[in-house]
Image (cartoon, rainbow, N blue to C red; front, side, top):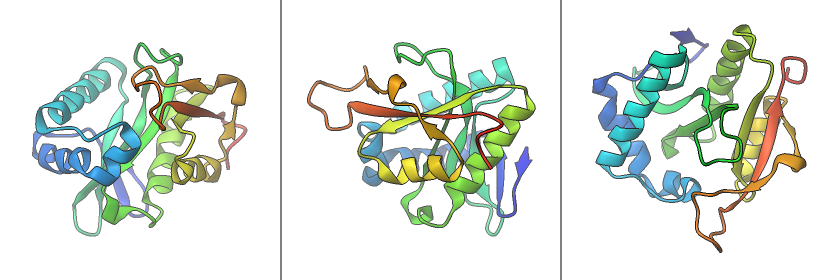
Length: 178
């Protein structure tokens, strides 16, 4: 479990599945993830997250707000799966309920996840998002991550012509973030 001033990052539990499914089904969230996820897809995602945590000791964690105990999102680090061109590298990512956007939660949680990863001696953590997702890129910059245009790619899970297909890659290293 990781604690920040306002948040707890922890492995998801079965009681979190409803909150995570609601986040994954929200059209505002889905707009940046290539579409919404139904309950079955959301539960399968949680199962993959739990398997990764069991195998590696880290993964995407449920983000619980201390003030009210509500799960408001997910953030963490995990190995990028195939067929992504960055497969095998450690990625940081996040997704939050829209009513939690714009309050600094993503940056606060991601900073804690980066600390955790670098404490494990992971020497580089990548983040990627659609070229048009300026809000996530702003979080990456606030974390001190640096855009690496040489690693930008067309996301293989998205159709040709999808405006989300072009992705940018940011890199964080222990010496490059505040």
